[in-house]
Image (cartoon, rainbow, N blue to C red; front, side, top):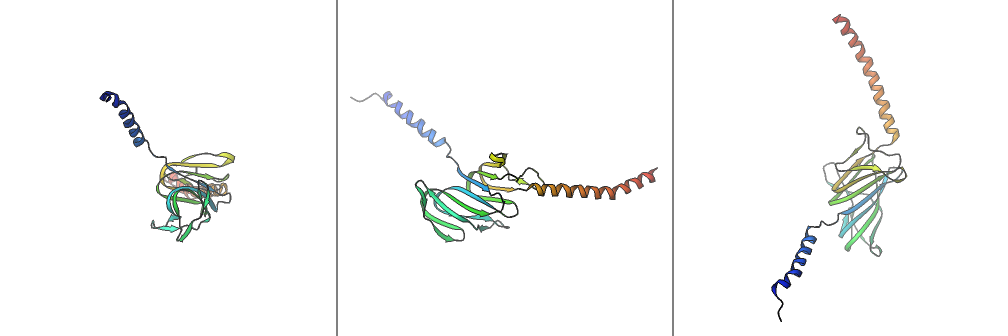
Length: 204
């Protein structure tokens, strides 16, 4: 015997609700983690990728893609490392899939930059002794949140961003800046004070 029409509406409504939930739920953002090494001349990276190709690059002066000089590349799948092919110009290829790529790259002039083809959730860890808080010599690109990390480290995080940029500094550089500022302030006072005194005398 054929079921009444109202008996078939329940499963249909449930299926529709499930479809709406799956459609409206945002996909989890890919993640990238970077760690500047203690000597601040290089960083280690761990980047999630989907596909069959990955390029290591940094923006040049005119925004062009400049290949990075990376070392210790590993492409890690669910069962461990897989082989990849070096295509030159900072590009590697591998079988289609989901992977985590780890590598090491240089840091120049205390300046870290990472650019992605799609939004990522990014974490940058700075070792103890490096800081970004002084706006005169340090900077963090928009959206970055700075917080203390374990063992005296500093962590900067971004949610859903395609570009991250950080300029960090050492305590010695901050001391040098402070000393330089004090010297220039003293010089300015020496130059300006006689002028102020002469104007007061002239006005009197």
